[in-house]
Length: 562
Figure 1 (cartoon, rainbow, N blue to C red):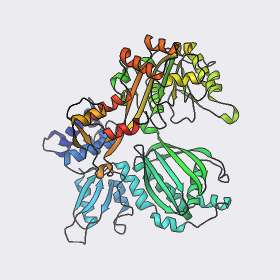
Figure 2: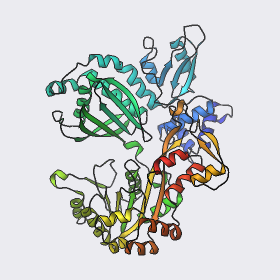
Figure 3: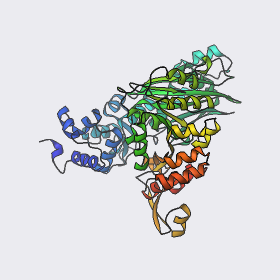
Figure 4: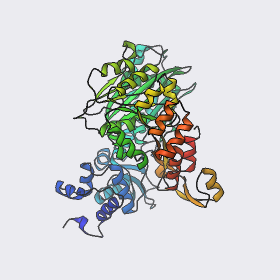
């Protein structure tokens, strides 16, 4: 009988923790058993359980700390005695070495497999003292080992980089290919991935180079480097992105594609000149995390159900609105993935193409040669499409062509920058769309925001008085919500991850009549709420607060401009 059949076996508790979290699909354990070896390892190898969920189950079942990937030592620990081959094979990372040998102080190791007792004994021998394990994902440990041990320490890399004038283009190109600069940029990218960042900001200042990460929508300072490494660092990024390193007066855009930690990752690179040099922003596009469908986005049923229904219709316009970084493209991509691409011809025109979608024809605009959104749309209409995705309704010409496409029997999906769903109607009219045409083609509008979710390890209940609840728009009675605290698992922020809050504007007969009359967005929203069951964005956010998912402060932060 296998180990996990015994109730007192640690592996049994790990599987029970996964099941309690809803992470074990029917038949998953049987498939893992059939593959041979330890069941928990096979579950991850086969993609039946993610590394993150397995790490959480280890921590819960074994009573260990779940260590955050962005809370690591800045320099390698036990550099003189560490056996890198052993650490990489066993996926173990020394975090602290403990006190003087023999004083009983434990060394702390991050481990991907806390059930490997032999590896823990070997680590104790390596450290010369007992080891206290904490849990991290294998991917995060591998990245940290590469950054801390395989590459030279950051200070050594920086010391090897000469101070160059930015005008020396040829020397800069040579420098960008040299080991210290390559390692410095590589370490910065690995650190951003380990922190779960969506963007890397490289900002030259008068006396330093600042590297910042955007994590869960908030910018955090990650590293401050000497000013003299700025030219080499920025040139290396430009070389990787295929940009002109000799042009520093104009903004440039490029793209980097790399396989890192076994994942295919794209970086969308943008440079812009500043008084202290070129500012660089790298948007991280992880192909592995971009494969979700609508039912994986966590949208409430009163939004997800009508949206899915409209995406099944043969014609009309469906819009997703919100500010930059609110997940509009992610939602539209999720909708496209749920379509039957074998039976429907799906074309997209984007600026830029962020993620590659299987079975879907994607086009990137190139204004320099005349390939604009409007031009591409006109061309698409001769390609016999069923569904057309337009990256953004930017101008009147694009909008009018999109309306014509919808009128001639095509389903058109696009995004728009408005504060709420109802605001899309007057915005389109301002772009020159006739009210009667808009009323005939618009199927529905989704507005969304991303809010940070509370860290489950440290959130604490908070009592609200009846007056405080009423001031937020909640029922006027004492209410319990949760507040952010901060712990190592969330890097002291109190939040970990993000979720969407959303509203869906259904275009029913009453709303269509108001659109034809040129009614205001407030009148349209009021009609949608009273006749179409629309739940406004702020109310959806309050429900997330009552569910303990986020805080009132987060809802106010993302909706206060509305």
